[in-house]
Every structure is written in structure tokens, then in C-alpha cells.
Length: 329
Image (tube, rainbow, N blue to C red; front, side, top):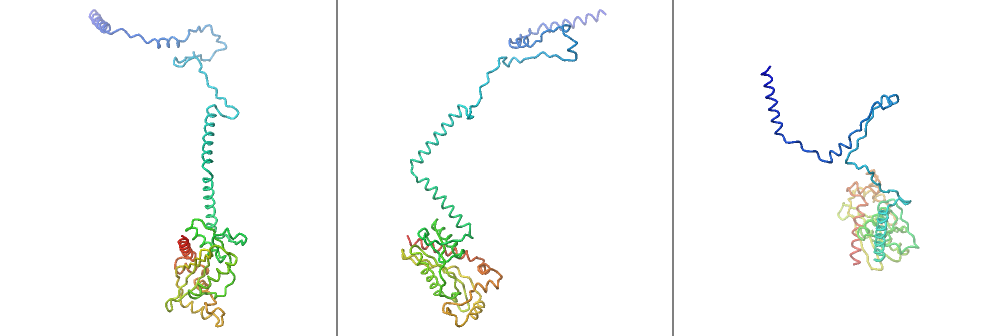
């Protein structure tokens, strides 16, 4: 027992020596001690509570964080006025109104050129849509408003009028084109030869010129020709006449081969006493070609060459408009 007590005393003395070497504890900061004192719950005498009405309820003393101030902050007044505008919004509105006024004054001071350019651009865009995207639109000619038209086509066939219109608009940017049907011409139904085609287009232009004394007039005729024996081709002739500028132009479309057997058939079926025999045949090639190919008479060129009749006509119309523009310059 004595030895045991001696060993325990030695251990305790060693522990005391170690503890004595430790520095005293550093005092806590003041804000921590204050917080602890503030959050310490007040002692409550349980016997003073009325247990009859408080049985089964848990009571917790509220603890407040020392970081949050106990004084409520003043909330800004965000009440909007009748127009839902804050003072800062009013200043922004004034600035915006002022900038708009400055911009308007600048545009007003620069003259009406800006507005006229915008209006002209919008009008030209609308004209392009109406005249290009609506191929079924029927063009009518008003003899009382002749001066408003720049070009008159001596036919009311939409495929011709629309192609000429598009061709001139591609070259000039904006061009009014309308159709006026010419009277029946004293020529063969199927024209043969360059001379017959030139005479027929000239006759159409002269007939329309009676109603259109000013401006260019365009006429179009299709014809067949045999440049080499037993080799027949169909061409289209676009003729333009402008009396005021003393301009007379002719443009031909790309040729389309026509089987010689078809030409022999329409030649044999034409009466020998046909009154217009000197300028061609009484039966058009398109009827025979359409019947054999089982297509519409206006589609046989596309079946034969892969290019539609309107595409051929449009290319010629662009060339005619370009030549007319160069002649005017």
C-alpha cells in the first residue's frame, strides 16, 4: 500500500509540474464576454409557474445575435405615384424625351430628303412584290393615264408582260410596264422567217402607238425558220420602238429545235388559198408539239430544251433593256 501511494504521489507531482509550466489562459475578448452575458437566460423559478395551465408546453428563451442591431432599420418609401414613376424614372423619361426631341429636330433640320428616300424605297419594294410575286395579276391599260407608264407591251398575255417587266426592272431598278392588246394583225398564225416576224412586231407597235404617243413600246412574236435544209428552229423576237428618242431595237431569244416532220404536217394542213400564206402557215407549231408531247402549248420548249418559254423570253427582255439603257446614255 505504501509503495502504491508513493507512485501515485510521484505521478501527481509530475502532472503539477507540467501544469505549472503552462501559461495562464488568455482572457476572452470583450465583445465575446458581452455577448455571452447578454445571451445568458434568466433564472426562472419553476415553482412560480402555474402548472395547471402550462402542462406539456416547452418554453424557450429567445436568443438574439449580437451582430444584428436591435434597432429596426428604416425602410425606404417605395410607394409609386399615380403614373407608376419614381423620381429617377421621371428624370430618365425627361432625358429620353429630350433625346427624341433632339433627334427629331436634327432630322427636321436636315430637310425632307430622309423621309422621301425611305418612302421611295418602301414604294419600290411594294411594287417589286406586286409585280414579281403575283404572276396571275392581270395588267390593264388606262388610256386616260398613259403618262404614268414607262413601257407598254403590245399584248395582254401575262407571260410576255411579266417577263418584259422583270427584265426592265433588273436593268433599271424600277420600271412601270403595262400591256395593251393590239388588234388582229394581217399575218399568218405561224410566222415563218425573220422578215415576217419583224413586219408583224412593227405592225403591233404602230397599232398601239395610236393610243400611246409617247414612250417606248415593245412587241413580241414567235416564228420558225430554216437556216439549213431540213433543220427548223423556233425563235422569239422582241422589238422596241421609241419615237421620241429615235430608237428601234430587236432582240431574239435562244433557238429551240423543231422536228422537220412537224413543219411538214402544218405545211400540208395549211390551205393552198390561205390569205396569209406569204408570211407563214395557218396552224401554229405549238399546237402540234403540245399534242405530241402531251403538255400545254406553252410548255413544249421546256420539254425539248430544259428551259421554259418564260426563261427564254426573260433573258431576251434583259438584253433588250440593257441595250435600250446603253442607247439612252
